[in-house]
Image 1 (cartoon, helix red, strand yellow):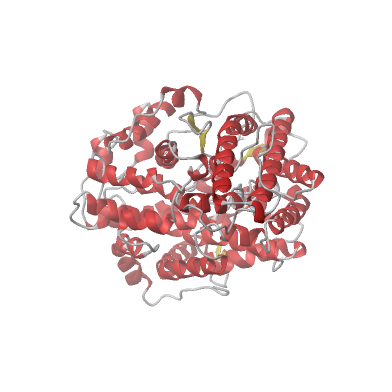
Image 2 (cartoon, helix red, strand yellow; image 1 turned 120 degrees about the horizontal axis):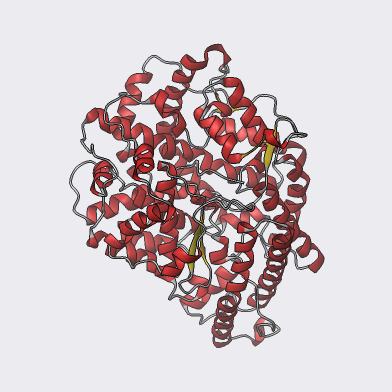
Length: 619
């Protein structure tokens, strides 16, 4: 099946980042640890951490290969191999966590050892029960849900294969067809694929909670929130604070978009002020870029046709990727190894099912890096390549660190790196690489470009926050199994002002989004959308840029590249606040840069929305 990269460029997402920090099995044998804390000392703790790092590095290639096969050759055999690899990994995680207990809190620990012991406790997003049978059950459910998603399609007539459409085809209908009924049919069709996951997810959540509780967390959601160098409660407050900073910008955009869609669809639009999910042009209403032709502030004024330019160029997927690589090497970063081009999946095979959802992979923690995509010559997939290479260069930068530190400063950092680069893909940059000719800038052209980008970046923000809001509610019991779908749509309404008619508890709409059956924590993408603008602002200052933030490109600037690379090399060896401060001068995440970047559009939206009825019931 084909999964279009509809979150430009963020969806890079499927990232099997779990492979960078989670999907590891242990070799035979067991790490040694004293039986109780009375017998433990700081030297033994250091030896234990070194042994964990050695096991981690030795086991990673086999586990990564198993997951790679499961994603690029979807069949029963590959799913069995992946499930067994995951099962062994989870058993290893349980064992080393039990052994690590005796060392946590010891006096005399070095900062590196103390941090390593904390990271061991958080090294998987899929905490498993210690009971071998339930651990195997968890691994099997995880593999089954991901395979169900990867092979999903919808048939208008189940008896006629010719009527079957995969996610790519259904998404094309949403993006290109403005007919209300055909869009609704495509949206509802895809959302049937997740119904069989519902019972699996109920059990999956139970098992995750059991595993998290064995690690002394109240539930899996608390465990996920604990991975940010602050308390789980403080982190939840922090995400609310960041959302509060950007909400006025989203609200202004929502008001204008709803007004234009009401002109398009008339009385079919809901009276409660929400926007129906199926008319946003995106299967998850997380990116409204397909609506740009309806929303372009100044039609015909310097609208860059990157899709057309790519098609005319005749570039294949590898050529597009080499252009993205050139951006990173222009900053002074190393060229990619040739094995990257030999071993990556760049296009969708014709002979088998694969997970097309874009992801970046570190196969051996030592330079065997790959991407997995199904690239087509479109702007969104072109920018997604730049995003994925951000992960790749992060891997390469921190490969010299001990494996426990080979991860982003926090998971939002990993997602923000490539997106930061994408902010430098200005019209002037695109002209410099020969992709477009007209790079003229004026106020109208700027507003066009800002609208186009806001339909991706700004629109994503509430969606990026609510996915885990739903899962945290599931894990702690606020959203009960008999209320899964209603709870989902309450959050979609509250944060996004998005609605859908006719949904019931027979549906499992969260499962129609890859990251739910794939068990990928999602707040990282919300944080990345904040951080990328903060990074961009700091790097533009390093490059000596003068002028508005939206006009800056760091392409070719070695000083900005050196600062960027220095941040990447830190990995997760220190609290993220220190790493952020080293780049930006501020150890706190701050959304003011995104407001600065989109200031021209916000002023334009406020002028257009004057006198309109804005907001929605439940918002």
